[in-house]
Image 1 (cartoon, helix red, strand yellow):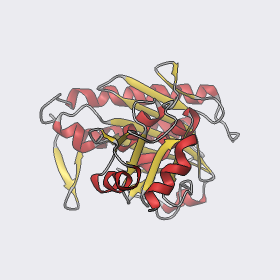
Image 2 (cartoon, helix red, strand yellow; image 1 turned 45 degrees about the vertical axis):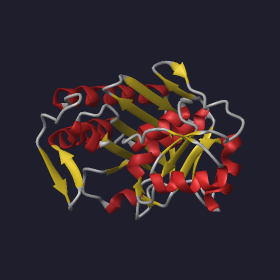
Image 3 (spheres, rainbow, N blue to C red; image 1 turned 180 degrees about the vertical axis):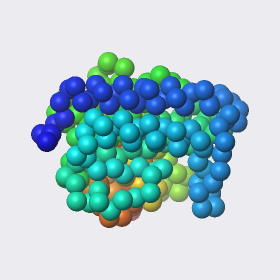
Image 4 (cartoon, one colour; image 1 turned 135 degrees about the vertical axis):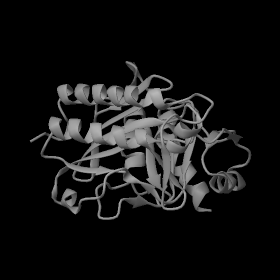
Length: 265
């Protein structure tokens, strides 16, 4: 059984799995154009492609082979309540940002987290179209392509670079004054990772994000010096019976109290 921090050998194997999954998806991706993959919809509006399913199948087989004792929770796999009985759980989104992937936008990613007792202990996020691999383990920092990540050094939220749903940006701006509105990043995982790498100051998240959208990025954020919380200030807990979350905010730890105050107003 793993300790609270996975060994470096497992982290390296998961990074390699993320890269392999990304390489599987790239032949279907058409920059600026419609994907070559077959596409259909879950429900009425949630797209899925044959690439999502292929990556999910590969990752489930590979990751559970690396650590068979862990449960499994993925966007593209029917939920098995047996995961609730496991201390460790893999939480995976094979393509976070399927709509972007399908339309030729480069902001999509493979997201892999290993969670222990509701907290992420390994986070890996790979953006194949950008060839950027983010990774983090508790107490060891957050990294992208071998370079250590650090959140923005901004000391205040004045003219902060903000992205997310328009209603949440409007709410922040009403209280804070003018902010710099960046284009919305269609992959939620990448939106959060860009707070971690300092290119975004505030990342806003609408209600109903799922564990697989945020678990890997959550740890990457924390290790880079940021916090991801609900608007009540509570940190997300993972592998619950219902893996949905309310509205959230990602911001540098030193600016978190002020940002939460603004969003509550």
